[in-house]
Image (cartoon, rainbow, N blue to C red; front, side):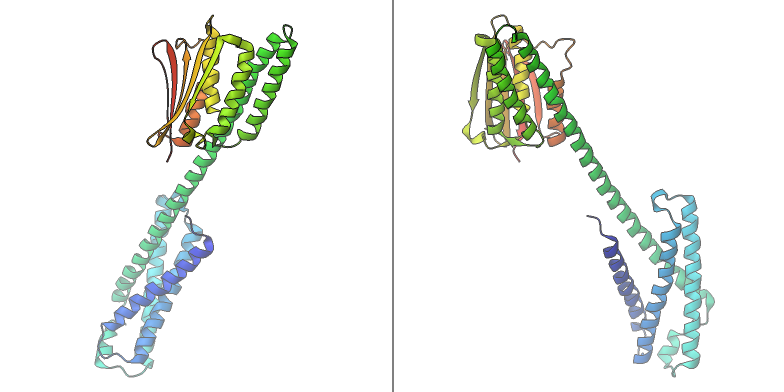
Length: 352
């Protein structure tokens, strides 16, 4: 989860105060017999100087450094700004140390030992390089971690939007595919039997109304999906008459399980179109739905051979595979094979 700008500012100032306060508190506690006035002065002044210098350094880094495209140019800027900030920190410590020693209260021997190198520019510079360097490294590491976290969140959001767009595209492909087959059937029967054509139109309208209201969801219950399948079979039987037999074996404890909409209907439609319709005497479609351990098993068997026409787009099968992959990644499976003069389509969907 990415922190808001306001929360990041709060975190920055809290860390600044605690960090510099701790460093200066530890540095004065190593001195024995230190006065209260010097303790307060050293901690407060050291903390204020550290915060002031690093605040200016941070202000420059935020404005001048492009963290999204960190390169040699940015490295040089960081190095130069670090050296300038270190020099400034050393000068300020030198000035305030000199003022306190020369014009402040009398110092004890221990306190004089503490300020032994206050007028040594070299020592002050080395001390500043160490402290400001540690701060700079810490700041850059935190910025890098925040950027990596932000990039990760953006990638996740992008993948989510992409998957949803792909799902919507697949859903949009299902309805035209089904409508094309049904309208062809109606057209073929229009001149032969008007009553049957009207009945087919009624069934088609029920199916389309169902698909329009339910297909916008990523999941519906098995019970709702079976209503769609029953309407489709009723519509198909008007065309195939006695050539189509449909057998349904559904365990009652699977009826309320959520599945992708129209996925069973696509299996049954594929069995009808590529199986039963190619057989002179027709055949049987068997739908089996059951639970096995942590999986929901959807199986559709139809009489016939596994033969896919050369001009077939296999759109229905591709839709099934892609939707399962988008919704369940590699946890779901789809298999289509020929077993003993039957074509068996098998889908396994994880329940957890």
